[in-house]
Image (cartoon, rainbow, N blue to C red):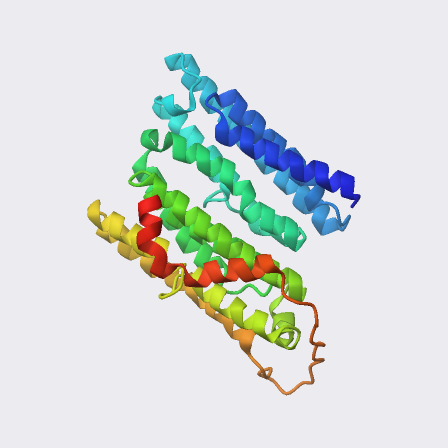
Length: 346
């Protein structure tokens, strides 16, 4: 893609995100979301492969439907209350429609079907933007309206997302699809705590974004897209693959790594809110996604393939690891001891 065009699309993404995050009026928030949608479409379809075009079409249709629902929800609220302010969403029907619309934007169950397909049809760098930056504007809208939303509905969506995100990722061999189901599962953890402690939702999102960025950038460096290539990629950059193993275990939420921090705080907060059954259920469901993270981690560090057919080993690269990956990996793995400081900031 032309560098100037690329720059315009990235700048538009930043602009759309900034408009949505900083707006108080529903129409401005909707405008920012629309700018984002239109800016990411060329980045999804830039390879001109039929799968990319299909991914861009699916993404456009689902996001257009979600944007229409957001507009409909805000108009219904304005009709009944005379308020266009985002934080003044008080009408129950509007709250239900908005929850559905943002679930569609984020890829929460049962509106998740588009997300694995779109991620599979996108390049790794675009997949990274879709999994992290594109989820920030809808998350901020959820944060701003959290006091008005229906707790029962959000809890049901969250538990279904954690269940299906873990269950549907079990038999996948394509790494982008595995990361898509991982994202759906993490969104379940964010949604369940949103009503009770919105700041924890944002903390979970930030840490998830850091860990996912690390995984995507590492995979992009080693040019790995499926499990069979991951098996032989360790020869390319052994130290990078070792750090990828730790980052994947962190993403799974194992102590003493960074990913354990949000899960620990969310379980603690749910228990305080007398929601111990929900906390137990979502913790058990996270074991499903732990299985495919462990499978990825196993494939990352395995030194001999498990069968006797000959494998072409890849040449070790002499290129130094980028500073961004080094910093992100450190944060993804070693942030748990700093949790008291993080909690004071949050």
